[in-house]
Length: 295
Image (tube, rainbow, N blue to C red; front, side):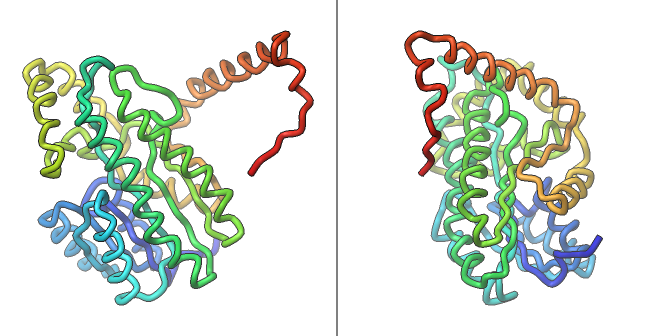
């Protein structure tokens, strides 16, 4: 299969470790120039050196994805160093803090949605104009989760944020198709990352989140369970190779865990049953054969 990535440039948020670094290594080995951007500047410097040692052309940029100006600065630095941008990987994200709907603090919701949703919005808004301008097409990969395909009890903020990422990806895939920019939602299950340690890079404006986290740490069980689930996941290197494979076959949804197919199929069956119920409804069944009008 031909290498369509060689000589092109990718920006990867959360690129200092985990999924982001694994993708930087994989695409770098395929001949891409990679721009890794991360809020953790110490980890970022080490990741940059690791990529340089592997003879990968790399640029490292400090980035808090909730800060739009820093996104614009990253795009400008990428263009100055490597020229046209062909790929954006919106990878940076946080796991939130497990908790019931009545116990999850508003500060926690704001933190999770600002990073996981608005971080993706900021990255795409800052980068898409550049990708459109050169007219060569490209890829946008938004890192969602299997939690974005099904709700997760006691993780409402995280699941909602990832469902939003899936929906945005679907919207942008249709919108950017005419520009030959493929948009994909990457929906892994458990992967060996440090997402369960998201508080390590908590920004100052969300420090109130630590109050809920402190209560959770005291109980211990939820923290230990999250850690065990993450550590039982697939290696990031396996995920990275799967992403390349899925891009080459043109997937809008990139799944890494086929064992979750039945759970998504169950949700689909519930949706289908709900439509059947509507078709049998004396209130709305007259709409069944109406033309579907889209914007």
